Image 1 (cartoon, rainbow, N blue to C red):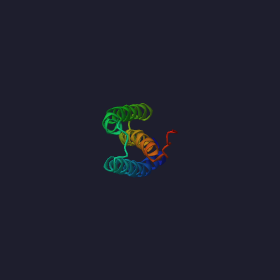
Image 2 (cartoon, rainbow, N blue to C red; image 1 turned 135 degrees about the vertical axis):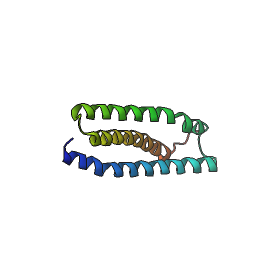
Image 3 (cartoon, rainbow, N blue to C red; image 1 turned 90 degrees about the vertical axis):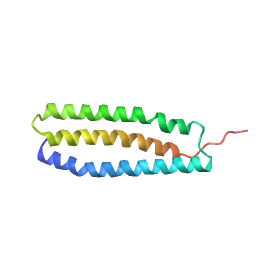
Image 4 (tube, one colour; image 1 turned 90 degrees about the horizontal axis):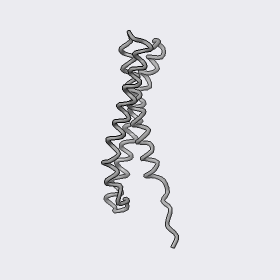
Length: 113
């Protein structure tokens, strides 16, 4: 990884982490309020638990794939490997959190009687 690309990855990682934190906080707030007000779907409680393991497994796979790719491209650049792995892990989890936020904030359709 060139110095310019490494600096770009180093600058992008804190922003990606902040975005992940904000999305996760929004999802937790939406789910907690829906459960407190009784407007959550019956399957939402199970979904909160069931989706974590596959999401973290996918993030770990993305991070290890990015690390191995970075290692093969630049074998003597451990900093670049770390940034590649951390970025892939963060983007994978942020994608799932963003999908949850969109699902939870989507307008509900009422069933016709």
